[in-house]
Image (tube, rainbow, N blue to C red; front, side, top):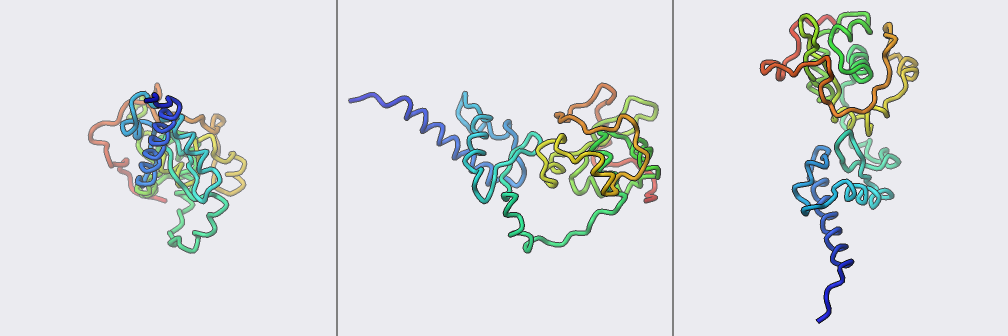
Length: 223
């Protein structure tokens, strides 16, 4: 009896893991990270290599495998997006205050409410931050190591996914945002496109307190 071909056996394992990965991604409503899928794959399997192989397989199909921050998800191919527009439900557009606030957080994170107000030149209401948090686009990151220990805010992977961004470095340039009227306030000299980061706290941030979960700072909404 002839011994099995090791190359064929290796290829079969690879294809099986590829199918498992494909199934996991299709079944998930949210982008999955490599850590999310690793437990379902064989020991010693490189999930990154599998993800890239699957991405290549879907490159020319109606759905593509795309990266969103640290996660991966199947999304409609960009050139076919128009076919689904008729199925989209009309949603209430964000207010100017919410758009400005979201833009500032995206480009200047981690940002405190006071820092957001400094850029905008007006008070940022609690309702604006609540709205962005309810949409899942921003989150409380920690507390600044300054008097009063203000909460710091940053964007989420849901923000990247909604706006079709692989990472924060894919954000439009500041000139484009100012041209669109999204940043009308005085811009600090250090405001720039951030490099992608893993969401870890910075040196000037402390972890959130246990009582901070699901809360924003309690000032009256003045937007």
